[in-house]
Length: 373
Image 1 (spheres, rainbow, N blue to C red):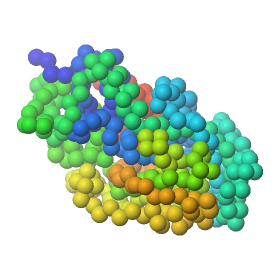
Image 2: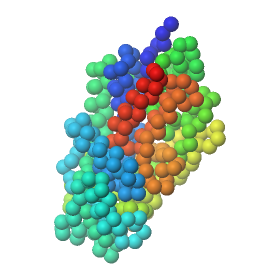
Image 3: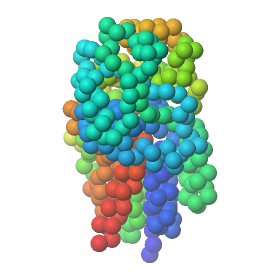
Image 4: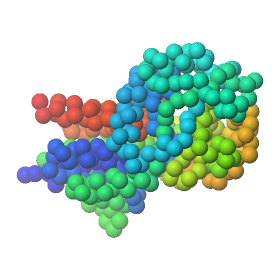
C-alpha cells in the first residue's frame, strides 16, 4: 500500500510554499493545504516587508550573521519581487537604546554588513536631542503580491498540488504514513501522506492539540502594522530607530504606502500556549477589538523624526505574530525545526523572518536524511 501523497504541507504561506517546491525535487507527489482563498495572505503579507541584512539584530550575533548570509541569495532569487529604489537608514537613540553608535558600527563591521555615516541632509531630518547618530545601510523591501504570483506560477509549473479553502484539522498514525483529517469547502474527508509538514505559523499548536500531541512553547502577539502616506521628502526613504522601544517606517510595496511599526504599540496583547491548551490564534484575531494605536505611534515617532508628524494614516494590517519565548531575551529569530513532533514524520517548521528560508531548507534536508537513515 502507498500513501495518497509523499508529502503534505499544511499552510500555504511563504515558508510552506517554498518548502513544498524544494520537496517536489525529491518526491513524486506533494500537496499544499491552505485554509484561506489564496496563498501568502496572512503573516507572509502582514509584516514590514523588510528583507533583513543583519542590522536589526545587534543583540543576537547568530541571527544577524544568518541574515547577512541569506540577504544576497534572497535578493537574487526574488529580484523581480524586490523594491530597492529607496535608501535605508538606521538611527541610534541617545537614551534607552541597547547599543551606542560606536557599538552599532563595530557590530556591522563584525558581520560584514556595509554601513556608512548618513549624509547631512538625512541627519538633519532627525532630532539631535534624541538621536546620537544616523547610518546608511543596505536593505530592501519585498512586494508580497508579486511574491505570491511568482510562487503560484512556480508551484503550478512544478506540478505541486494546492487545495485552497481546505483546513487540516488533525493528524494521526495510519498504515501507511499519517492520516490527515481535512475540512474542505463542501465536506470533511481524510487523506494520507508519508511526510507531513506543519507550517501553519501561529496555528502550529492548534493541529498538535487537536491530534492529542505535545504542544510547542510559543508566544503570540496581536500585532498592528499601520500603513501611512509619508511626506514627499520621505517617500524614497526607510527609517529605523533602535535598539529598544523604538520604531520603523519603510516602503510597503504591495500598497504603495509606508509601513509604521513601533516596538511598544504594534503589539496590542500577547499570550502563550501552555500545557495542553492552545488558544486559536486566528479565532482570536477575528474576534479581537482592533482599535488602532497609530496616534500613540505617531506621538512618539515625531519626537525623533519631526517630519513624520505630517504623515497621513490610511489603514492598519492586523495579524498574529508568533515567536519562540526564548527569543524575547535577545531579540533572536531562530527557526523552529521540530522533527517527528509527537508522531513519526510529522515535522513542525516556523521561521521568524522571510529571508531565513534557506536555513529552513537546509534543516529540512537534515531531517529527511535522518529519517531515511
